[in-house]
Image 1 (tube, rainbow, N blue to C red):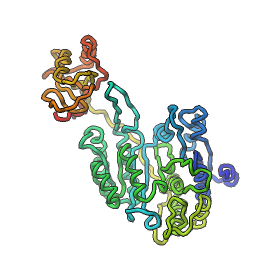
Image 2: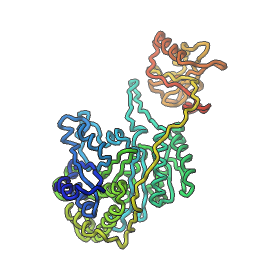
Image 3: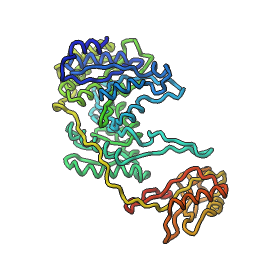
Length: 494
């Protein structure tokens, strides 16, 4: 079914149309996209469709990103992208199109509603209704990794104030707009006091601007356990990237099925909407796939572009179809389901229910033009930044930190001296424990002598002297204070 030409020929003169980019993807993607478009168009969605090709064919044609430059131009021009699942070929240096799209287009907010459909879809949590708001661009997903010694590889965890402010504000604005009562923050700032500490700090700052919305913070481990056990205790949860990636899938699964969940990726300029499941190539072309996940993404898209009453009509019709027991194979259950249907038949059942609402499941009501309009981030005045030391990371194959200290103290000057050595973050000199296991990757901290100041020339001098002494320095990290506040971690045990 060619929705692009069919729909454009009929509606091309309607000035209220929103032009969107559509990619049908791989595997079951074309089937569930056709079903999704059929439903939202039948509901009256005022959209004009421009289709692009992304995914496996593009990868195998030699494009390691899975998308052509011309397709990027289309997405950037239209600003709204509805994407079916794709297949990324194994090996060969192929890049994740999802990650690339989110970063290139600045899609900083990933939004995943996870709602129980009890008793029609199996779940241990019949009243679950949680929205996961995940930061989408930074954290460990910056993908900056280096092997530094034979034994140690590092991955840089990057957390920025703009990233924190944008995602936290989005979570509170989402809660305000959709009548949610509470926003919860998950971090691990008891350990990562600088990175996760910043996320928690920004959460506390922005929460004060929304006194009508309850706020709370949980350490990620116990918070995750609580969410898995008692999800009804939460409403909106906002998290850094990695935690949000893991827990949004957990939340979708315990609500009933990952296959029923949709996802919105929101930026200041562009937005992408999708199902959270994969392309399931084994089910392709068999009229079996459940289009619900992509349909949920499309409903979020309709809200995003201000067609909220259409979104409301589609969501309620979908809920009515689930309630009627008209189910695809993945959620079909004897004694609960009434009819097992294919992809096309499911779409037709939803269309037949347009204008109706469920009786047992909770119907939805969206405000007119339910699009969130958030302010763009404005950079703050810079803090007073002062250099107060340097960490030299050293590759050394020995095992006794006291021996290494005697070697590295050869770099001491009248102004700068070795103050500490750590291994994997644990202080091993001075006053380390013999029981501490050490790798070949050592952090040697140099601080200025009391009454002296350290300069970047001093750091260059340390590095030059290290070359002379055959000390293998593999990286440096300058130590700064910002408005007098320490901007670096201490060694564990210090």
